[in-house]
Amino acid sequence: MNRINKVGQEMIEYKNELAKNYPDLVKRSMISVLEQLVSVGTIDLDTLNYVKNESVSIIDFERFIKESPLFEKTKEEIIAELRILEDRLKEILDLKDIEDLKTSIIERDEMVLVNQVFVFDEAFVLRYFDISDESEVTTLMKRGGFVEKLAVLRLNAILKPFLREKKAELEKVEMDLSFVVYDNALQGYKIEIYFAISEDKFDDEEELLAYVDTIMEVAEDARTEFEQKTIA
Image: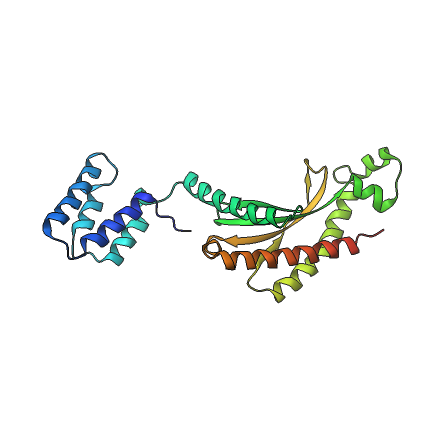
C-alpha cells in the first residue's frame, strides 16, 4: 500500500510541475502557495526548500517524502482505505451469492482477507454422535473437554493436508490456516482458512474477479473435503 498521504502526494506533484519549463511567473505563483502551506503548518521549511531546490531530483524528493513522518498516512487513513477495498470484495461475493465466505482486514499486513469457517458446534455434535440428550452435549462441549480435543485433532487433520496440496497447486494464491479456537458467537470450536488479497490486485478488476473465482473454487473443495470427512 502507498503510505504517502494526500499532502505528500501533492508535494510530489508540485515538484514535478516546478521541474517543467514554465515561465518564472507561474513557478513563483506555485512557490507562493507552498509558502502559505508553511505558514499554516501543513508543510515545514525543509519540504519547501526541497521542492524549490532544482538540484534535488524528483527521485530524491520522493524518497524524502516517503521517509518523512509528516507525509505518512495515519492508522485511521490506512484502515479506511482497506475498508473501501473490503466493501468492494463484499460486493463481489454478494453478487456470486456466497454465504459461507466472510471478509476482514489485516491492518499490519495491509491486506483484505476472505475467511472460510469450519466449526464443531452443538448441532454438529448432535448429528455426528447421534445424541438426543442435550445435557450430554453440554458436557462434551465444555472447554478442555472431549469436543475441543476432537476439534483440534480432526479439523487440523482434515484441512492441513488439503491446504498444503492447494498451496503447491496454486502458488499465486495466498492462503493459510488458523489455530482452532472457541468462538462465542458460533458457540463452537472453529478453524478458518484465510485467503489474502493484496491491495495491488484491486487495481485490475478482471484480475481481481479471476482471483476471487479461484478462491471460491478452493473454498468449495475445502467444504466438500470437510463434509466428506465428518460424516458419522
